[in-house]
Structure formats: structure tokens, C-alpha cells
Length: 368
Ligand code: ADE
Ligand code: ZN
Figure (tube, rainbow, N blue to C red):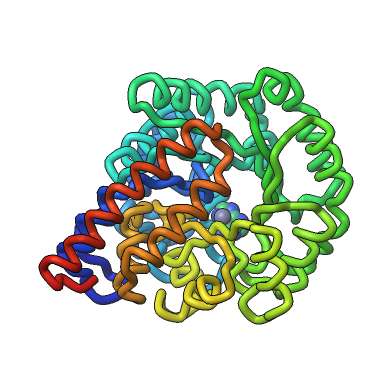
């Protein structure tokens, strides 16, 4: 998925590149539908006899790849993303998508992957939630057995479809929640015109099922959406959260409550949330003691930039050293939904890589 240099900033030194490649990683913010490449999209559309819209961008794989380079905002991306999702029909399609992602993530150094998916985007097209979960869980189980990765599935509800449909959809997954296949819920899609507080009954239901909880907030929307996510919905994890940087009291609150922001800097550039990765508020999060992880969001729509490329883009922008990367590793591991034994193992492995970096810096004056 990724190689040394990046289109999203300067070129990192080869030393820090190799360190970042070797760092054990957690991916917390990845929409599996967002890993559907244009080539697989056309292949599955043909196999499943799905009619794509009669619009110029769907005329060919090349036209679609070009179109993906010019999103103007979140909604322009979502419009393409839901069309893309419509070619996924069978459990095998979902399995293949997830397996392709998991093998690429393994190459990028991911030890623990939390995969979000949008059940409503499929259910409203007549695809049963059981089919979606069957395909995804075949791939995640295989990754646990063959790739030695831990995985989670996050049931992500679309907030523009409203509370009632979200509640109904979550209830459809009860069996998969009971048997541990679904471990958490998320909330995604647009933030425009949404009252986050209205989703409190959904979060109460999820907590009553024993699920973990997260929600997209503060991607395009104001800091108030992040406040509502933590204060009203009760989340100790927020997906994106970049606009939290505008509110010092909120930063303090996120730091005090050790709330993890799962940030996606390349996504933010592609969706015009920020102009460059160097404009991302990550240094403010670091200074304020806010935990954050770095994630790829929808890599197939954002130049096939997997998690390692996201790490490299951040390094290109900020030229950090082992101390800052230790903060990111610690935040990622502590905020993960994996067991404590794996957390300890992963932190120890990160410490080994970062200690090497530290000592190489001292020995060779290699810098960052
Ligand atoms: N669904 C998939 N990617 C998303 C994003 N970046 N923001 C909101 N909803 C999404
Ligand atoms: Zn997202």
C-alpha cells in the first residue's frame, strides 16, 4: 500500500521511514467500504450485474480514479462512497474486501485492526446484515489465525438516517453482539444539520448490550459536536475530532478524560478539512496531552494511502522524534479495544523500536 515517500508532504529521512514501517500499529478508524479500489468496484459491478450511475466519472476505472482526486468536501466523497458500496452483494464480496485490506494492513505493520462498516448502506439495498457480517467475520477470523492480528468489527450507523432507523438496525444485530462478533458502534456520515444529542437512546442501547462506543465528530462540524459526543453520548473515543483544537477547554477535557481522537490527516486533506497535513492540529493535541492515533479512514478514495503512508505524511509534516511517536504509540494502544495482555506486548514492541531510534540518534547524530 505504501512506499517511502508521500505526495502529502516532504520526503521523510530513510531512517525515520524504516522506523515508522517497523512500528507496531493499531488502526482504529477504517471504513471497510472505503478500501474498495476503483478496479475492484468495476470488477464487482460486472460480476454482480450492478448498474453504475450514468455519470462521466463512472465511465471507466481511469475516470473514477481521476474523480477521486477532486473531492470538494465530505458530502462529495460520501456521494461516491455510497455508490461504490452498492457493488458489494455477497458474503464473498465482503470477505474479499476485508481480507485484501487486512493483508495490506499487515504489510504496513498493523498488529490490531478495528474495521468499521455501514450496515445501513447495505440493508437499505436489500442486503441482509447477516450476509455482511458473515463475510467480514470470515476475513477477520482468518486474519487472527493466519496473520496473528487482533481485530474488531464496529457497527457504524449513519446519522443522517435518524435515530429510529439506527435503533432498528442495531437490534437486527443482537445475535452478532451476543456472540461477540460485533464489539462496538460508531456514528458516521454528514455532521451538517445533525443534533448529536438526539442519538443518546442509541448509545444507551449499545451500552446496555455491553458494546464499546465511538462516533465521528468534529470532522467538518464544530467543537460542540465533540462536546456532545463525550458529554451526552458518553464516548471515550472520538473519530476525527480535529475541530476540537479550536476549543482549549475541550482539549483540556479530552486530556483529563484520556479520550482518544482517531485522526486521519490524509483524509482531512482530501476532503478539504485542511489544506496540508502540516495544518493538522496534531501538535496542539500533543501539547495539550490529548491522546490520538493516526488512521487511514477510506484509503481507496484517498490515493490508496494506507496507514503507513499516513504515518509518513505526519512525519514529513512535523519531523518528530521518538518522544512524540511514543505518545502516539501509547495513545493508540491504550485507546484500543483489545485485551490487556496484547496491549502490554504491543507497547513493549513499540518501546524496542523507539529505543533503537533514540540510541541511533545519539550514536550517529542521525537526527529525526
Ligand atoms: N463514512 C466513511 N468515511 C467517512 C468520513 N470520513 N466521515 C464521515 N462518514 C464517513
Ligand atoms: Zn471515518
